[in-house]
Each structure stands twice: as C-alpha cells, then as structure tokens.
Image (cartoon, rainbow, N blue to C red):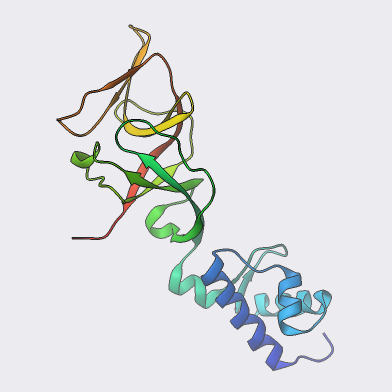
Length: 201
C-alpha cells in the first residue's frame, strides 16, 4: 500500500465492530467500501494490514471481526425467532422469521439453533412458562426424556419425548400433572430444547 490513511483504519475498525455487534455477522467487503468511500481492492489491502497488526481477525473472506469486539463480546450467533410453539394441545407453528437475536457462544455454545416462544402451561413443571423464549437445537433425532419440538401432522408441540418401540408408538409427556400424555404412532422431531431465555419474576 503506497499511502496509509490513518483515518481509514479508524473508520474500518469502528464500522466492523459496530456492524458485528448489531448483526452478529461481519460486514461484506462491499459494505465496508460503501461506508468508508474507498474501493473494495483498497479495503482488502487495509484489512490485510490491520490483520497483520492485530487490530482485526480476518480470514480473507467474509469473516472480519474487530479484535476488541471479540474480547468484549466473544463469538456471536445470529439466531432466528420463529414464532410460538404450543405447550398444551398441538397447534400450528408460525414459521415466519420475526427477528434475529444475537447470542454469545461462550454461554449458548455453537450449533444450528432457532428460538420459539412458549405458549400454554403444559411444561410449567420443567420451568417453561407461557411467553418464555426456548432455544431449540436443530436436529431430527432425540434421546429418551429430551424436550422436543414434535411435528404431528401439520401441528407442533413442545413435550418430553418417550419413544415406545415395543408398542410402535411415541409418548409425548407434558410437565404438568393435571394434563395427560399425548400418544401418537409417529411424529417428526424438529429440534431439541437446550436453554430458556426468560425474565425473572
């Protein structure tokens, strides 16, 4: 790089940090170019220099992270919120993405996740109340006793999973003593609940 403009270094680092904190992903080369007002090729040269000086983490692709941001916040997952899931009788799930939430991997781990809002009171004895946000790991298998998002025909429900291969059925158990198990011949596991995000009363 023939001439290094110190102001560009500052603008790039600040934009990368702010974008990452807001969106949970790195900005593209084009987005940095448009923000700072220099060409993509020039942006790439500045990023390479900043990486060599330890100001950013940069792989050469769309993985640009301010070193300060990583120290302060750690790696971030951008997780979609998909609507509500029944904690009572099965009901249709709203599958449109309502928003994204940034979650630190230091607390929630890595993986493919989505978030659903709990609806109803069938899982209250597992600590899942109406309106709680449930973090779901995307997978189509489950262990005995896992809390799963189960698809039955065109409806979903959040229940404990107890397969019964001897009788060729599955028992979906509510964590509410006043409610009965749901017995089905088959269901599709759409994910396993791993954490709750909720307000303390």
